[in-house]
Image (cartoon, rainbow, N blue to C red; front, side, top):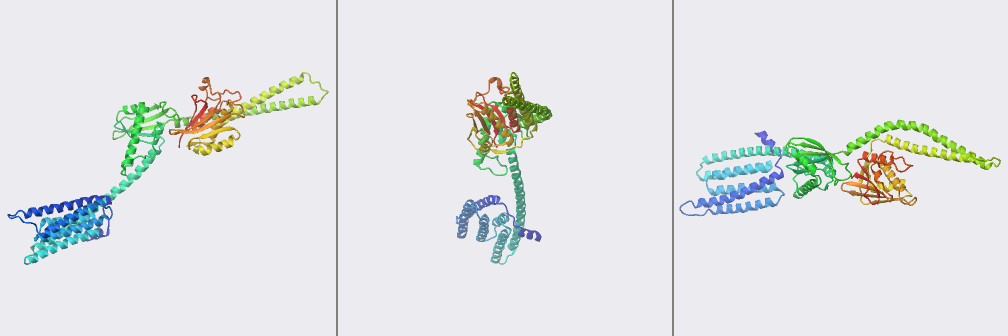
Length: 572
């Protein structure tokens, strides 16, 4: 017992402030009710005799003062949140004092009043520090023993009631010990609960961040209502998302404004989902409870054009009866397939291209030597007046044109080989964040200085793209625009517009040429398809391959009033 008391006096663990305030309000209300009840019982007891009488002046004064102070302490504790333990300590000392005065005014030992001391002792050990609670307990014991001792002296040294007072004092200590034990256990439970709540909060923050940053869309439907939808789900389904409204935290008490904002966000998401993706919502709701399902969803035309038209949908049942819906963008699979296709094509074409370049270089060199011979002979003929040219001069000129054709065609074949080798040498895209408003002017200055290329940036978007591959794509598109412009060089011009649509960044490359004919549209991005006899037909094919490797779409927009090639990349 001694060691337990020593340990208690040395430990200073009390209830958390939230619990302390709650229990303090309950005890303050209890004090006010006890005061009113005591006043009522005093008057009822005084009227039980045959002759009506009033309570003693001391009883009336003490109880009136007690009720008034109880009301003041209750209001003060409710309004003032600082120094709550001091307020409680003052109130408990007041309780002991008032009870002692009432016990004294009663003139004889009163078991009911004495039992109220135990409530005060128990409350002090639960609400106050150990030293404060022990002082209040000793104060109650002293008052009870003194009152009983005084009553024993007044009744000719009858010490029978004094023994009862000593027994009651021992009961006070026992109640204090039990209250301490209960309070100590409650504090430990509160600490464990707080530790668990902190761990849950930490895990919830991690889960919230993981769900928010996931590339796959996550939707949870419970009782045919959406209760969770992350950023990726909004982006993949091209639905508006307010990034200032985070996912709710299970560990923290949500304020009403934040909760209403998140509820409104989910409500808007559910309404837009039912309007624009009725087929998807119906398919998810039609799956029976407890069954998992996987299918491919074709996005409607209203969905954002940066999506390749298909999503893989996983429906996973949860234990509480709700459904977890995972949306996977098939662009990553298509990008991987594109990389495998490029790698396979590269292995085949690299060896063929190298073998072709060797005889091609010989042919090109031979044609150049023959052209030089023709030029040399012509120069000698023009300087030697004694030689009669005749028909041989005509033959030499014809040969020169033929040699020139051979040389031009070997250069064209060499360009095709160079493009094929570019295709075979491509590695996986090394993406990095590109701020287009800063990167694009530098790019145009490096590659198109002196050309009429006009840039209009309407926003400050950031995309994730391999910078070398983006350069190749834009060089191809801008060169095509300059080549096919309706104005001849040097008056040809190209316009570049950069803006945002929903969650995507749009880059339009515009020229005022005749555009692409309807017959050529279906073959536009096929390899080796070209309408220019000097072209290789690999420029647009390579550009589209680079875009797909970076999760970006390259489209020709026939509805635009100008010739428009559009890049649509997800915004970072």
